[in-house]
Amino acid sequence: MITLAEDAADGADKHGVAIGLKQNTAAVIRAELAALTSGEETAALKRTAKATASAANKSADSNAKAFIARFIQLEKPRIGSQWGPLWQEAGFTGGSISNPASQEDRFVLIGEMAKFLGNHPECVVTDPLRPDLDLTEAVATALYQASLAARTGVNNATNQSSAAANAREVALDAMRRRLGGLRDELMQIPVPGDSPLWYAFGFNRPDDPSTPGIPENLTLAGGAAGSGTLIADWNAARRATGYRVKVQVPGEPEPRSFGLFADDQTTLTGLPLGVLLTVTITAHNESGDGPASTPATITLS
Image (cartoon, rainbow, N blue to C red; front, side):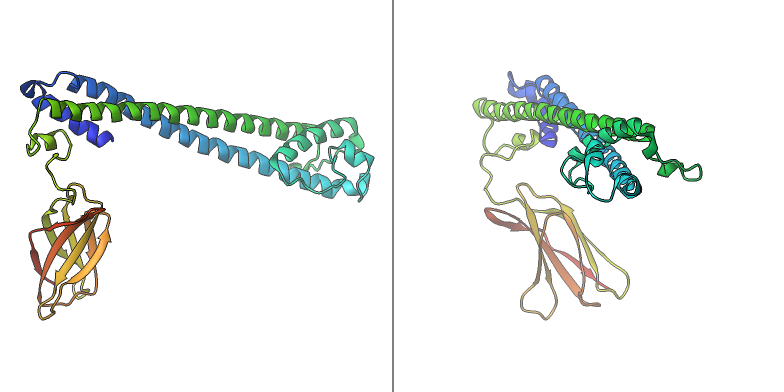
């Protein structure tokens, strides 16, 4: 859509005055194009921010999960290997002392653990040699706050990403309407259905067939010596969604067919060496195949 809008603005710049374009001028198209481009850039940035926030949230939850596992392991000698009142006070309210399966439950539990360790200094565990294994109110509180910040961050990032995506869609819809209006105005002027001016605005001509155009400027190159590799490159054809490549090998009754390729270049392998190969490209879309390109030849060594 952005590419088409750029073509439309260029066409309006070059030909708008001459053909009497009134409503869908270059200035109007470029203003909406700027809004669409900005909307897409903002949406992309917000998607990245959402991914970053999600990663931070996952990391905070992983740290909380590890702390809970350590708490369970180290506190069993103090408050029992079976669930009971002290385990319930510590936040294990489900009749089990297993690590919760959900992030939401782990977040709530780590907050309750901080309160428990504050109320039960006899359950505090510290190790000067391994402070990363400490079970203290301060550590639990820090993990709770980190999880809270991460959860808030991912919620905010999700909301901002959704808002940016919605704004981008509004700009995209506006551009669709603008380009539709431009095409209608060109019809009303009228620009003849077979005029090349339609191409200048980025549109197919009304008189064009539904099948794709002809791929042009086919160029061929060989791969490494002895590999039987052929590299083909061509200009994209109008209305094409894919391309078929045909290689005629001397002495074979029918050309070898390769495809469908989405790109306007490809690499073929397993071709014979030392003979003149003739290559053609045919564009394809849902309406069928278009005319074949001008043939090109190459001999692989």
